[in-house]
Image (cartoon, rainbow, N blue to C red; front, top):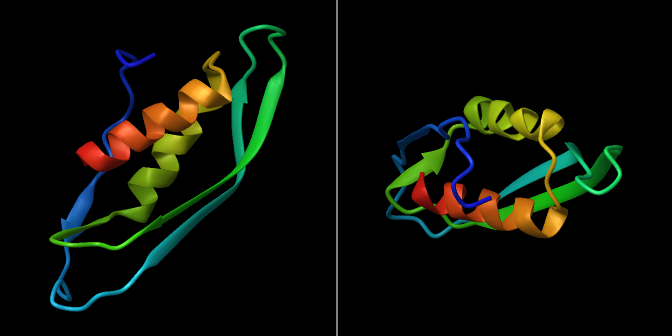
Length: 89
């Protein structure tokens, strides 16, 4: 799963990088396909981060999460792939 080609998560320059604050991203309807059963699998994902130089662009992140709707992947792999891509953005 680490080699899974996912959409790019866009970022924008944080104009308030001198401030210490937290951004919460809630994905209440995350969906992927269970690779064992082939059935839809649902999850609530919450990401909390303190931006530094860049902030995550929300529309691109939403499109990124929608990508997983047709992918057969276990949640344990999926959440780690999301973390890797989020940090890389």
